[in-house]
Image (tube, rainbow, N blue to C red; front, side):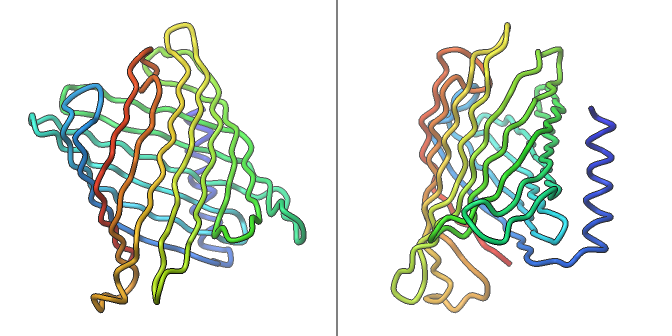
Length: 236
């Protein structure tokens, strides 16, 4: 599976070089929360994101750097190219794709992981939404953990407000249980206001909140995170 995802990554880079690029976005986010589970409750997070859409499909990539008040640190990221296998010109369904993800990370306590996901992705035309996607994956997990399945929803809903916008976006992950892990449900929305027009900043400058509603965090039965984070996000 690792070789297959490496091949998918090379395909994504090659396709990007040759394809028509419809959209790309770079952003950096700072978050601060005090109700994290499994480790120090108080953490700050810096997130670097890149997303694009092209004639061959789309890519989403992010890296989180988490710093805990007790001195612990962690890096976690995901690289998720999707390759179109069918595009629809009319109707609610926009595209069907081969969906892949590489999850990677390590922390200051010596833990590391590399998980690989492959499945089917869909993109939808939903009125008022800038994007709406649904993916179904088979997970191939690291560290002797059993493979399982995952369902993911992502969305973005811009809401006009005065001369700017409020953006409601986020994701939902449901992951099936295994012999050694409980099933997980992670609902993480963000709601944020673009203040760039008011402060004279180029691009988009969002301020707002992220809320994490995560049952059985990391597959640990009974560990439920309810975590409100303050958020600042800048799109270049």
